[in-house]
Image 1 (spheres, rainbow over the protein chains, first blue to last red):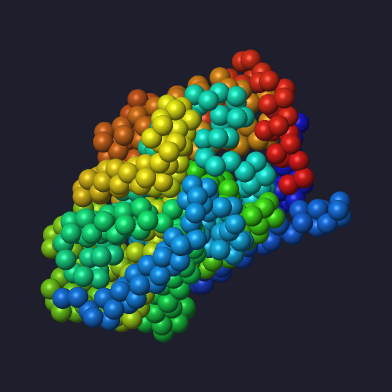
Image 2: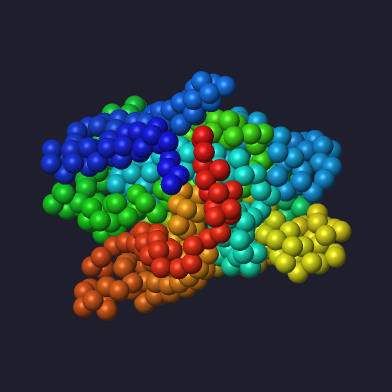
Length: 70
Length: 533
């Protein structure tokens, strides 16, 4: 059975894990009421930095694997 | 009265796209150039083109409008849209480029060994295309109103004519290069406008506090005593918003076809990095604008300062609805926020960026429809001699017809631009998304499941959305609320997003109980395409 490469799941766990932690933090500790916290974790990290890290690992590791296999 | 600086920047924008389009036209020699840009587009250009094609006026106008309505919780829906981009890299993009078809419908016809799927997939895609062409023309109308200060009706007519000229003479080569330019422009526009708003308040800290002072519920979540809005009053609703557009980048035809235009699989993967980089910055800007819109409109909009309208953002927007005839005036909130800066340079760049995003989205969708109607239906299914001998001419005729349909609907749009977008997304992902994604990754995906899922989910979702919108009042209320004995607003499931997991479940169940596909077809269009991604 075809199966997406392991690195695909790493990216998913990274992003969904981050979102889940943020929501748990908001629901239990009220992170959303800390001034400028949402701008940091939802905007800067959630909307830009972490998706960007995912996009890098999704092209970097497949290319490394292609180079290794010639 | 139109501001000459705003008009001048817009004129410069049009000069730039005409020059780029002219160079593109000189290079265009065949139908393959017209449809898939000769498969010669590099990663940076394709990444930028992906950004400006995928992100439509639903992003530029609709997302800030929903942040304006719902509050901070909507930022997560925006974050999910950007995070959906890298997910597409390994889920569909790389495999689709390896396969290298011409039309979105090719994969369905080949993988499920059934040419008639071109009809079914085409009908569903065309439904989404009409909604997207409509919202693009609405966007053109709104930005032309901001530029020229004339009635919205004139704006949509002029906007449709501009897009017609643009698409009819360009094809995918023109849309690729112009779309890349448009991506840079709209990203710069959002960033400049966001910086302008933060500067107005004197920094990010004062900006945050001003929002809180204006609306103490703005940053609330469903766990707070008073949620920010009924649409985000439960975590189920927040999760629903998160997933409405999340998988669109991997499955929507106007992005999937852009993976066909690149040189190779490596370029397809890298193009998504560039897209995520620029789109992420663009969305950061939109989040800032959307969150600050209400407070800046109420403190600094010229209509408020002149005393024409009381210091109330809703009343400012109502003024635009009454004076200029804008049908879905909340879509104007983002432009009104930038007008409040009273800087014609910023407004001019924003409007040029807005026209850019509307034109590139309309062009991208028109190209998808062109290929389906001209190549898949007329040439391949009906064996039309005219379509075979005059593919570009026929594609141009089709472009004009669909733009005219979009124009008619855009004059009095049935919903906000973001609602039209959400409708298109969920209907397409729920009905033909499972057969695309699982067709690649599951040998057991069957032809019968493709037909049954597409037909049932298309009809069911259309009914559910329309029932929720016209009987319950909003497309975000679960269509069975009253049937379950609940209040109309009891369960919020944005754009009936439950349809997406249901579509996947239905597809799997039917695949398990129906005839397995031919082994050689599965080997070619499932196993080999997903090897070594």
